[in-house]
Image (cartoon, rainbow, N blue to C red):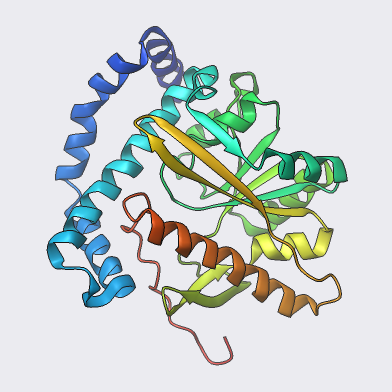
Length: 293
């Protein structure tokens, strides 16, 4: 059933021009907004933590509302690019592609760190269209059928998932991806409660952050990049790719913490510059540091 449903959705989307697709998707996006009051409360709480009283309540509610639609439409566009990947070419420009090229030429794999900013998932279609093999670390789906469906269509030019659980299998697969000199995409801006987390500053408060991206880079020598999509005009984005460098002589644990802080600070800078684009609905500061963390 999962295979049939997926095939039907892709078939229908391929028949639709983009404006009509967006028009048909609008009622579903609107309904999702109406039934997501908990997410609205979470967003308001996160904005209060980040900006305190420097933003009036009305502005916080506006940002929370706009950021919800930014995330929702980004996911809607992702489905469109899955069915019609070439459509992403004209909607995304890349600044810093030379860093990605140089990283691939080094031959040790590439770790691209992203955040839940704008069309963070849809933007990966641009790199796929440019010929890069993209693997994305993501939460495992509850449905085994849908998990299998996500990896069953390599011909569709979609990012291939690396499921974060079971952890051991995830780690093995990440090392394999880097050894094959492929592009491993990892988000870094959500609360992380698993092993290997580090607490770094985010909007002036400690936030539990996955140390995986930095850890893999330090262990393997893979290139470490950040990539964020910035809005240019309606329906068009500029993906800014930047390298993250460190002193190879630095102690491994210090290097991991340092790199994680650098990347988190970049996410904060993007969220400050484009607050309507970041996903405030997530409870980023949920975890509290334990002793020695």
